[in-house]
Length: 409
Image (cartoon, rainbow, N blue to C red; front, side, top):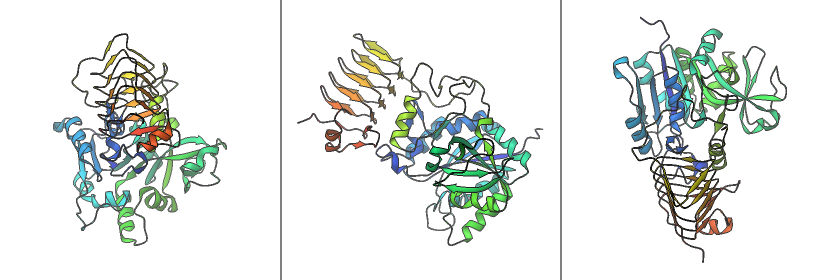
Protein backbone atom coordinates (compact mmCIF):
# COMPACT_ATOMS: atom_id res chain seq x y z
CA UNK A 1 0.00 0.00 0.00
CA UNK A 2 1.13 3.53 -0.75
CA UNK A 3 2.26 5.69 2.16
CA UNK A 4 1.76 8.91 0.24
CA UNK A 5 -0.33 11.50 2.07
CA UNK A 6 -3.93 11.84 1.00
CA UNK A 7 -4.65 15.10 -0.80
CA UNK A 8 -7.90 16.76 -1.81
CA UNK A 9 -7.58 19.49 -4.43
CA UNK A 10 -10.14 22.29 -4.50
CA UNK A 11 -10.20 24.57 -7.54
CA UNK A 12 -11.95 27.91 -7.05
CA UNK A 13 -13.85 28.56 -10.29
CA UNK A 14 -16.84 30.65 -9.25
CA UNK A 15 -15.71 34.20 -10.06
CA UNK A 16 -17.64 36.46 -12.42
CA UNK A 17 -14.62 37.63 -14.43
CA UNK A 18 -16.04 41.13 -14.97
CA UNK A 19 -12.75 42.48 -16.32
CA UNK A 20 -12.89 39.98 -19.20
CA UNK A 21 -16.26 41.18 -20.45
CA UNK A 22 -17.68 40.56 -23.02
CA UNK A 23 -15.86 37.19 -23.10
CA UNK A 24 -17.55 36.35 -19.79
CA UNK A 25 -20.99 37.67 -20.73
CA UNK A 26 -22.22 34.15 -21.38
CA UNK A 27 -19.66 31.90 -19.65
CA UNK A 28 -17.69 31.56 -16.44
CA UNK A 29 -14.17 32.97 -16.58
CA UNK A 30 -12.47 29.53 -16.25
CA UNK A 31 -14.47 28.37 -19.30
CA UNK A 32 -13.06 31.11 -21.56
CA UNK A 33 -11.20 29.51 -24.51
CA UNK A 34 -7.43 29.86 -24.60
CA UNK A 35 -4.68 28.87 -26.98
CA UNK A 36 -6.97 27.67 -29.75
CA UNK A 37 -8.26 24.39 -28.30
CA UNK A 38 -8.12 24.79 -24.51
CA UNK A 39 -10.18 26.40 -21.76
CA UNK A 40 -8.51 28.39 -18.97
CA UNK A 41 -9.40 25.73 -16.42
CA UNK A 42 -7.47 23.08 -18.35
CA UNK A 43 -4.18 24.55 -17.12
CA UNK A 44 -4.75 24.14 -13.38
CA UNK A 45 -6.43 20.74 -13.87
CA UNK A 46 -3.50 19.57 -16.02
CA UNK A 47 -1.01 20.69 -13.37
CA UNK A 48 -2.88 18.80 -10.66
CA UNK A 49 -3.37 15.67 -12.79
CA UNK A 50 0.27 15.64 -13.92
CA UNK A 51 1.29 16.03 -10.24
CA UNK A 52 -0.73 12.88 -9.43
CA UNK A 53 -3.27 14.85 -7.39
CA UNK A 54 -6.38 13.40 -8.95
CA UNK A 55 -9.15 13.89 -6.42
CA UNK A 56 -10.31 17.31 -7.57
CA UNK A 57 -13.43 19.32 -6.73
CA UNK A 58 -14.12 22.40 -8.87
CA UNK A 59 -16.30 24.94 -7.04
CA UNK A 60 -18.48 26.77 -9.57
CA UNK A 61 -21.15 29.45 -9.34
CA UNK A 62 -21.68 32.09 -12.04
CA UNK A 63 -22.81 31.11 -15.56
CA UNK A 64 -21.31 27.71 -15.05
CA UNK A 65 -23.11 25.60 -17.68
CA UNK A 66 -20.34 25.57 -20.30
CA UNK A 67 -17.73 25.05 -17.58
CA UNK A 68 -19.66 22.16 -16.01
CA UNK A 69 -20.18 20.62 -19.44
CA UNK A 70 -16.50 20.93 -20.35
CA UNK A 71 -15.39 19.30 -17.09
CA UNK A 72 -17.96 16.51 -17.37
CA UNK A 73 -17.11 15.64 -20.98
CA UNK A 74 -13.35 16.21 -20.84
CA UNK A 75 -12.01 15.41 -17.41
CA UNK A 76 -12.75 11.71 -17.02
CA UNK A 77 -10.11 9.76 -15.12
CA UNK A 78 -9.92 6.23 -13.75
CA UNK A 79 -12.64 5.87 -11.12
CA UNK A 80 -11.28 2.40 -10.27
CA UNK A 81 -8.26 4.15 -8.75
CA UNK A 82 -10.43 6.70 -6.96
CA UNK A 83 -9.65 9.55 -9.35
CA UNK A 84 -12.18 12.21 -10.24
CA UNK A 85 -12.70 15.79 -11.33
CA UNK A 86 -16.15 16.93 -10.30
CA UNK A 87 -17.85 20.31 -10.64
CA UNK A 88 -19.52 21.38 -7.39
CA UNK A 89 -22.12 24.15 -7.81
CA UNK A 90 -23.20 26.39 -4.94
CA UNK A 91 -25.63 24.12 -3.10
CA UNK A 92 -26.87 26.45 -0.32
CA UNK A 93 -26.17 23.71 2.23
CA UNK A 94 -25.96 26.23 5.08
CA UNK A 95 -28.88 28.44 4.14
CA UNK A 96 -30.47 30.30 1.23
CA UNK A 97 -27.35 32.14 0.07
CA UNK A 98 -24.75 31.86 -2.66
CA UNK A 99 -21.02 31.84 -1.96
CA UNK A 100 -20.08 35.03 -0.12
CA UNK A 101 -16.40 34.78 -1.06
CA UNK A 102 -13.72 32.21 -1.84
CA UNK A 103 -13.37 31.13 1.82
CA UNK A 104 -17.13 30.84 2.19
CA UNK A 105 -17.23 28.69 -0.96
CA UNK A 106 -14.98 26.13 0.73
CA UNK A 107 -16.84 26.44 4.05
CA UNK A 108 -20.16 25.79 2.35
CA UNK A 109 -18.57 22.74 0.71
CA UNK A 110 -17.16 21.32 3.95
CA UNK A 111 -18.92 18.03 3.23
CA UNK A 112 -16.30 17.37 0.52
CA UNK A 113 -13.53 17.57 3.10
CA UNK A 114 -15.32 15.48 5.69
CA UNK A 115 -16.18 12.79 3.14
CA UNK A 116 -12.66 12.59 1.64
CA UNK A 117 -10.74 12.91 4.97
CA UNK A 118 -7.53 14.21 3.36
CA UNK A 119 -4.28 14.90 5.18
CA UNK A 120 -3.72 18.05 3.12
CA UNK A 121 -5.88 20.36 1.06
CA UNK A 122 -4.66 22.08 -2.10
CA UNK A 123 -6.62 25.24 -2.95
CA UNK A 124 -5.80 26.69 -6.37
CA UNK A 125 -7.36 29.29 -8.64
CA UNK A 126 -8.78 28.38 -12.03
CA UNK A 127 -7.75 31.10 -14.43
CA UNK A 128 -3.97 31.48 -14.67
CA UNK A 129 -1.61 30.22 -17.38
CA UNK A 130 1.38 28.27 -16.06
CA UNK A 131 2.94 24.86 -15.48
CA UNK A 132 3.67 23.66 -11.96
CA UNK A 133 4.55 20.38 -10.27
CA UNK A 134 2.31 20.77 -7.24
CA UNK A 135 3.88 17.76 -5.51
CA UNK A 136 7.08 19.78 -5.01
CA UNK A 137 5.09 22.51 -3.26
CA UNK A 138 3.41 19.85 -1.11
CA UNK A 139 6.80 18.44 -0.11
CA UNK A 140 7.90 21.94 0.93
CA UNK A 141 4.71 22.36 2.95
CA UNK A 142 5.21 19.06 4.79
CA UNK A 143 8.90 19.75 5.46
CA UNK A 144 8.10 23.18 6.93
CA UNK A 145 5.82 21.80 9.65
CA UNK A 146 3.61 24.87 9.20
CA UNK A 147 -0.12 24.89 8.57
CA UNK A 148 -0.20 27.00 5.41
CA UNK A 149 1.95 27.44 2.31
CA UNK A 150 1.41 30.18 -0.27
CA UNK A 151 2.96 30.00 -3.75
CA UNK A 152 4.82 33.19 -4.60
CA UNK A 153 6.32 34.38 -7.85
CA UNK A 154 9.14 36.90 -8.02
CA UNK A 155 8.19 40.18 -9.70
CA UNK A 156 10.20 43.40 -10.08
CA UNK A 157 9.68 45.54 -6.98
CA UNK A 158 8.83 48.48 -9.24
CA UNK A 159 5.78 46.56 -10.51
CA UNK A 160 4.79 44.83 -7.28
CA UNK A 161 2.24 47.47 -6.25
CA UNK A 162 -0.23 45.85 -8.65
CA UNK A 163 -0.27 42.52 -6.78
CA UNK A 164 -1.01 40.93 -3.45
CA UNK A 165 2.48 40.87 -1.93
CA UNK A 166 4.09 38.42 0.48
CA UNK A 167 6.59 39.91 2.94
CA UNK A 168 8.72 36.99 4.05
CA UNK A 169 11.65 36.48 6.37
CA UNK A 170 14.80 34.60 5.45
CA UNK A 171 13.80 30.96 5.45
CA UNK A 172 10.38 31.66 3.96
CA UNK A 173 8.10 32.32 6.94
CA UNK A 174 5.57 35.02 6.01
CA UNK A 175 5.66 38.21 8.11
CA UNK A 176 2.92 40.14 6.31
CA UNK A 177 0.42 39.66 3.52
CA UNK A 178 -0.06 43.01 1.77
CA UNK A 179 -2.72 43.90 -0.81
CA UNK A 180 -1.26 46.15 -3.55
CA UNK A 181 1.14 48.06 -1.26
CA UNK A 182 2.45 51.46 -2.32
CA UNK A 183 5.96 50.54 -1.11
CA UNK A 184 6.38 46.80 -1.66
CA UNK A 185 9.01 45.04 0.47
CA UNK A 186 12.01 43.47 -1.22
CA UNK A 187 13.13 39.88 -0.76
CA UNK A 188 15.80 38.87 1.74
CA UNK A 189 18.02 37.66 -1.11
CA UNK A 190 16.98 40.25 -3.73
CA UNK A 191 15.91 43.72 -2.64
CA UNK A 192 14.74 44.69 -6.13
CA UNK A 193 12.21 41.84 -6.28
CA UNK A 194 9.04 41.08 -4.34
CA UNK A 195 6.94 37.95 -3.91
CA UNK A 196 3.51 38.24 -5.55
CA UNK A 197 0.91 35.75 -4.43
CA UNK A 198 -0.13 33.32 -7.16
CA UNK A 199 -3.42 32.59 -5.39
CA UNK A 200 -2.32 28.95 -4.87
CA UNK A 201 -2.33 27.51 -1.35
CA UNK A 202 -1.72 24.26 0.52
CA UNK A 203 -3.10 23.65 4.02
CA UNK A 204 -2.89 21.00 6.67
CA UNK A 205 -6.51 19.87 6.80
CA UNK A 206 -7.56 20.47 10.41
CA UNK A 207 -5.88 23.86 10.47
CA UNK A 208 -7.88 24.96 7.42
CA UNK A 209 -11.13 23.64 8.91
CA UNK A 210 -10.50 25.61 12.11
CA UNK A 211 -9.71 28.77 10.13
CA UNK A 212 -12.82 28.46 7.95
CA UNK A 213 -15.07 27.92 10.97
CA UNK A 214 -13.62 30.96 12.73
CA UNK A 215 -14.04 33.04 9.57
CA UNK A 216 -17.66 31.93 9.16
CA UNK A 217 -18.42 32.95 12.75
CA UNK A 218 -16.94 36.44 12.30
CA UNK A 219 -19.66 38.87 11.09
CA UNK A 220 -17.01 41.39 10.02
CA UNK A 221 -14.99 39.00 7.88
CA UNK A 222 -14.86 39.30 4.10
CA UNK A 223 -14.81 35.48 3.76
CA UNK A 224 -11.95 35.66 1.28
CA UNK A 225 -8.99 33.32 1.10
CA UNK A 226 -6.40 35.99 0.32
CA UNK A 227 -8.01 38.75 2.37
CA UNK A 228 -8.96 36.81 5.51
CA UNK A 229 -7.80 33.19 5.74
CA UNK A 230 -4.15 33.67 4.74
CA UNK A 231 -3.67 36.71 7.04
CA UNK A 232 -5.08 34.64 9.93
CA UNK A 233 -2.35 32.04 9.42
CA UNK A 234 0.29 34.77 9.05
CA UNK A 235 -0.81 36.34 12.34
CA UNK A 236 -0.25 33.00 14.10
CA UNK A 237 3.17 32.49 12.50
CA UNK A 238 1.86 29.45 10.63
CA UNK A 239 2.41 30.47 6.98
CA UNK A 240 5.36 30.16 4.63
CA UNK A 241 5.99 31.19 1.03
CA UNK A 242 6.89 28.65 -1.64
CA UNK A 243 9.21 30.19 -4.24
CA UNK A 244 7.83 29.31 -7.69
CA UNK A 245 11.36 29.69 -9.03
CA UNK A 246 12.27 26.46 -7.21
CA UNK A 247 9.64 24.46 -9.10
CA UNK A 248 11.14 22.25 -11.79
CA UNK A 249 8.74 20.97 -14.46
CA UNK A 250 9.86 18.24 -16.88
CA UNK A 251 10.40 19.51 -20.40
CA UNK A 252 10.54 23.19 -19.46
CA UNK A 253 12.71 25.41 -21.66
CA UNK A 254 14.90 28.30 -20.57
CA UNK A 255 12.32 30.63 -22.13
CA UNK A 256 9.20 29.30 -20.43
CA UNK A 257 10.47 28.03 -17.08
CA UNK A 258 8.54 29.73 -14.26
CA UNK A 259 6.13 31.32 -16.73
CA UNK A 260 2.95 32.51 -14.99
CA UNK A 261 0.32 34.89 -16.28
CA UNK A 262 -2.80 36.21 -14.62
CA UNK A 263 -5.16 36.65 -17.57
CA UNK A 264 -7.81 38.53 -15.64
CA UNK A 265 -7.98 41.50 -18.04
CA UNK A 266 -8.48 41.77 -21.79
CA UNK A 267 -4.97 43.13 -22.30
CA UNK A 268 -3.36 40.37 -20.19
CA UNK A 269 -5.42 37.73 -22.00
CA UNK A 270 -4.29 39.07 -25.38
CA UNK A 271 -0.65 39.36 -24.31
CA UNK A 272 -0.64 35.78 -23.04
CA UNK A 273 -1.79 34.62 -26.47
CA UNK A 274 0.97 36.61 -28.13
CA UNK A 275 3.40 34.75 -25.83
CA UNK A 276 2.39 31.52 -27.58
CA UNK A 277 3.04 32.33 -31.21
CA UNK A 278 6.69 33.34 -31.60
CA UNK A 279 9.22 30.91 -33.06
CA UNK A 280 10.60 30.37 -29.54
CA UNK A 281 7.45 30.85 -27.46
CA UNK A 282 7.52 32.35 -23.99
CA UNK A 283 5.04 29.62 -23.04
CA UNK A 284 5.50 26.34 -24.89
CA UNK A 285 2.26 24.44 -25.52
CA UNK A 286 4.29 21.69 -27.19
CA UNK A 287 5.93 20.34 -24.02
CA UNK A 288 4.90 16.66 -24.21
CA UNK A 289 6.59 15.84 -20.89
CA UNK A 290 4.07 18.00 -19.00
CA UNK A 291 1.11 18.22 -21.38
CA UNK A 292 -1.88 20.50 -21.06
CA UNK A 293 -4.84 18.16 -21.40
CA UNK A 294 -8.19 18.85 -23.02
CA UNK A 295 -10.66 17.27 -25.44
CA UNK A 296 -9.48 17.82 -28.99
CA UNK A 297 -12.17 18.68 -31.50
CA UNK A 298 -13.07 16.06 -34.09
CA UNK A 299 -12.28 17.95 -37.29
CA UNK A 300 -10.00 17.59 -40.32
CA UNK A 301 -6.62 19.22 -40.35
CA UNK A 302 -6.27 22.91 -41.11
CA UNK A 303 -6.27 23.71 -44.84
CA UNK A 304 -4.56 26.49 -46.81
CA UNK A 305 -5.87 27.24 -50.30
CA UNK A 306 -5.53 30.00 -52.90
CA UNK A 307 -2.06 30.79 -51.49
CA UNK A 308 -3.49 31.39 -48.02
CA UNK A 309 -0.71 32.11 -45.55
CA UNK A 310 -0.16 32.06 -41.77
CA UNK A 311 3.06 33.14 -40.04
CA UNK A 312 3.88 32.90 -36.32
CA UNK A 313 0.35 31.66 -35.65
CA UNK A 314 -1.56 28.75 -34.14
CA UNK A 315 -4.07 27.29 -36.60
CA UNK A 316 -6.42 24.71 -35.07
CA UNK A 317 -8.10 21.75 -36.80
CA UNK A 318 -11.02 22.56 -39.06
CA UNK A 319 -9.69 25.99 -40.06
CA UNK A 320 -9.50 27.09 -43.70
CA UNK A 321 -7.37 30.00 -44.87
CA UNK A 322 -8.51 30.54 -48.44
CA UNK A 323 -6.27 33.22 -49.89
CA UNK A 324 -6.10 35.30 -46.70
CA UNK A 325 -2.98 36.44 -44.88
CA UNK A 326 -2.59 35.73 -41.13
CA UNK A 327 0.18 36.89 -38.81
CA UNK A 328 0.69 36.39 -35.03
CA UNK A 329 -2.82 35.08 -34.53
CA UNK A 330 -4.39 32.21 -32.59
CA UNK A 331 -7.27 30.49 -34.36
CA UNK A 332 -9.67 28.10 -32.64
CA UNK A 333 -11.27 25.28 -34.66
CA UNK A 334 -13.60 26.00 -37.59
CA UNK A 335 -12.39 29.49 -38.54
CA UNK A 336 -12.68 30.47 -42.19
CA UNK A 337 -10.68 33.34 -43.73
CA UNK A 338 -11.42 34.35 -47.30
CA UNK A 339 -9.32 35.77 -50.13
CA UNK A 340 -7.37 39.01 -49.60
CA UNK A 341 -8.38 39.28 -45.95
CA UNK A 342 -5.66 40.37 -43.50
CA UNK A 343 -5.58 39.27 -39.85
CA UNK A 344 -2.78 40.12 -37.41
CA UNK A 345 -2.18 40.04 -33.64
CA UNK A 346 -5.64 38.64 -33.05
CA UNK A 347 -7.54 35.81 -31.35
CA UNK A 348 -10.29 34.16 -33.40
CA UNK A 349 -12.56 31.73 -31.57
CA UNK A 350 -14.54 28.87 -33.04
CA UNK A 351 -16.82 29.49 -35.99
CA UNK A 352 -15.47 32.96 -36.87
CA UNK A 353 -15.82 33.99 -40.53
CA UNK A 354 -13.62 36.65 -42.14
CA UNK A 355 -14.80 37.91 -45.53
CA UNK A 356 -12.85 39.04 -48.60
CA UNK A 357 -10.70 42.15 -48.19
CA UNK A 358 -11.63 42.36 -44.49
CA UNK A 359 -9.02 43.56 -41.97
CA UNK A 360 -8.77 42.36 -38.36
CA UNK A 361 -6.05 43.95 -36.24
CA UNK A 362 -5.35 43.63 -32.49
CA UNK A 363 -8.75 42.08 -31.91
CA UNK A 364 -10.47 39.26 -30.06
CA UNK A 365 -13.47 37.82 -31.89
CA UNK A 366 -15.62 35.49 -29.81
CA UNK A 367 -17.42 32.46 -31.23
CA UNK A 368 -19.34 32.72 -34.50
CA UNK A 369 -18.52 36.37 -35.19
CA UNK A 370 -18.87 37.28 -38.86
CA UNK A 371 -16.73 40.00 -40.45
CA UNK A 372 -18.30 40.70 -43.87
CA UNK A 373 -16.38 41.52 -47.03
CA UNK A 374 -14.31 44.70 -46.76
CA UNK A 375 -15.11 45.39 -43.08
CA UNK A 376 -12.33 46.49 -40.70
CA UNK A 377 -12.09 45.63 -37.00
CA UNK A 378 -9.48 47.06 -34.63
CA UNK A 379 -8.26 49.66 -37.11
CA UNK A 380 -10.44 52.61 -36.04
CA UNK A 381 -11.16 52.49 -32.30
CA UNK A 382 -13.71 55.29 -32.42
CA UNK A 383 -15.66 53.33 -35.01
CA UNK A 384 -15.33 50.16 -32.94
CA UNK A 385 -16.75 51.92 -29.89
CA UNK A 386 -19.55 53.41 -31.95
CA UNK A 387 -20.49 49.89 -32.99
CA UNK A 388 -20.78 48.97 -29.31
CA UNK A 389 -17.57 46.94 -29.09
CA UNK A 390 -15.23 46.93 -26.09
CA UNK A 391 -11.83 48.56 -26.64
CA UNK A 392 -9.32 47.87 -23.86
CA UNK A 393 -6.84 50.34 -22.39
CA UNK A 394 -4.17 48.64 -24.48
CA UNK A 395 -6.13 49.10 -27.71
CA UNK A 396 -7.56 45.59 -28.11
CA UNK A 397 -11.01 45.46 -29.71
CA UNK A 398 -13.30 42.70 -28.41
CA UNK A 399 -16.39 41.51 -30.28
CA UNK A 400 -18.88 39.34 -28.40
CA UNK A 401 -20.43 36.04 -29.47
CA UNK A 402 -22.38 35.72 -32.69
CA UNK A 403 -22.19 39.34 -33.85
CA UNK A 404 -22.33 40.17 -37.54
CA UNK A 405 -20.21 43.31 -37.82
CA UNK A 406 -21.89 46.04 -39.85
CA UNK A 407 -19.92 47.95 -42.49
CA UNK A 408 -18.82 51.52 -41.80
CA UNK A 409 -21.26 54.20 -42.93
